[in-house]
Image 1 (cartoon, rainbow over the protein chains, first blue to last red):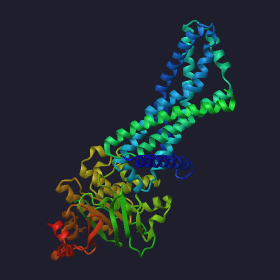
Image 2 (image 1 turned 90 degrees about the vertical axis):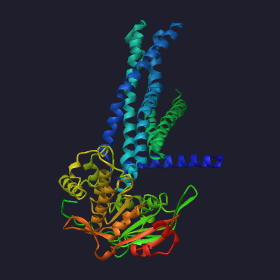
Image 3 (image 1 turned 30 degrees about the horizontal axis):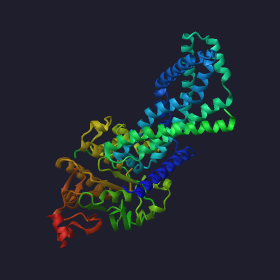
Image 4 (image 1 turned 90 degrees about the horizontal axis):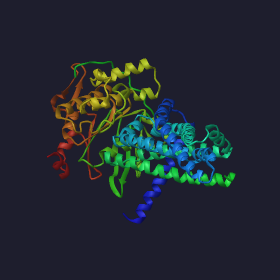
Length: 255
Length: 279
């Protein structure tokens, strides 16, 4: 393939992705709105992902405490373990790990489901039956992922802090001191940063998953390819946008 | 064909009632630099069935997707009920499609929905009265003789049954235009005859306009030389070797229309390609 053709394809893909994302968002204000599909997807994405998010959050908090307590002990600062765990969990690891977990579980799910529908002409059939697939399939997925990822991140943050507390207590740190330092460390910009990130990550997961699903070509092999691409692209975009938001909040709030 | 059923009244026509239901005007389309259809012009008036014949990969399915506005033409105009579909907004196009029924090549049933929900899809989207929905689903499934399969899922059905469910889904609102994409493709001869009989029943009982794509000459011959008898509920040969006046045949050759006319004209054609095609 020529370089020019390759670049043209990539630019077209970005254009199609942008159009899909824009239409999915503006559809929120257009009738009909598929409430039932929104609830179903919220259940599938939110409740369905809760166990992995709880486990990941809890053990990440634990690992953070384990590593930081042993390092901080060398400087006699074991008491500030809570500060480190809560700031890391709420600003970075809670949103990013939850995003990556949900991306692995749901971006792939969306890409394979919509991809299978695409290659078996079910998407065309839907359009032929007078139903807009973007309204019926994409908008509910995007909206429910954004909403549910915020709640999943809060759960992950809470469980991470708890996991850190559990490990800290086994390492001789007073639990009350741990939670006190964890709470005292937080400022509103930190919480804001931690809650803005899942909004963007949720948008990335659902739009990337749906885009690769809707643009699937080439039978079952194409479905497999779309699924892999959806997880890879959404994971990279999550980490990249996390970097940008962190930069922005440091620029805006100085922390 | 053994059961009889009540005939729901067709939905009111939209657009200009005197205009042809479908009209292609110098339509061309291509993909990845290759032309698929070139300067295609034809029309189907109300109650007419146009059977589109041609070899596999000749752009027959693309033609149906163009007729339904699922893909836009590169050049030319597609008029439905007298209106240029390229000038319709997305919203208007979705509204327009409620007057068109389409049977896809591989049925394209929603595999996570039951037969009932597949057939009722359009009515459920329009939030019709549940009792009315049930009545119409039963009527539609009776038409294709599959009322016993109402609670099954597509994966539990045979290829022929799936095709019949797809027909039931397409006709549930008695649309003004029906598009059949290879309805007998991949089916055994007996099942193919059942499907063709259903298509004929729809044509003769409801007098609906239809475009039917097939690569099986036999389907075209059967549709052109037979009519559906409501009394015996079976298809029968038209007397004196006659042909159905509302059935037109169209043969595509490398993206062009090689022939348009009745079966009699087709058999009399001196065109070497047509003669080879018929051989």
